[in-house]
Image 1 (cartoon, rainbow, N blue to C red):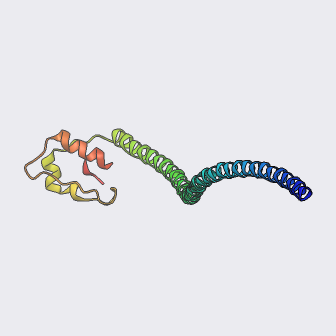
Image 2: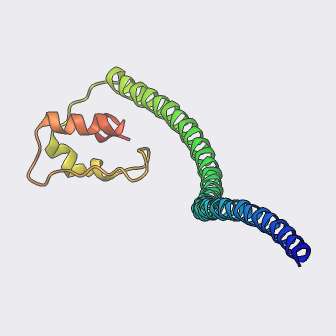
Image 3: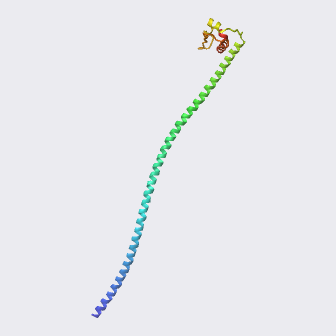
Amino acid sequence: MKQEEAQLKEQLFLYMDKFEEFQTTMAKTNELFTAFKQETEKLRKKIKKLEKEMVIWCTKWENNNATLLQMAEEKTIRDKNYKVFQIKLERLEKLYKALQIERNELSEKLGVLKGQVSVKVADVDLAVPVMHSCADLDSSNMLNTSSKRAPGVHLEADPKGMNEAKCYSKALSTGSPLGID
């Protein structure tokens, strides 16, 4: 029995050593588990933070992408408008050049016509200056004839009588000396 008791005591010490080993292993495992749990919690917090940042960046990206698409559409519209305005500008420049050419041609024609009128006035000045009174012109109705005058130009005598200077100036403006054709 003493032998059995000694054997049991030995087994008890052995089991106590194994139990202590088990407890130290369990303590270490618990420490590792708590450390792992803490690390997991930290990582979970980081993941949540990163997910929030990811959502923020995704919304920013979507907003920027939408803005970019809108800007691209606006640029396309502006490019079309630019082309239309370029065409209109080219047309206006062509019209401007055509109008300048026409203006120059008309100015030349006007110069020629003024030259012709001045030649006629010079011819009137060189012609025999016969002075008729307005009453003589009125009685012979010489002012109402327009055979050699410019079309649409009619001189009319004042029924009350005009002074000679007025008659002379009217005759000069028509190109015929004192209503004589």
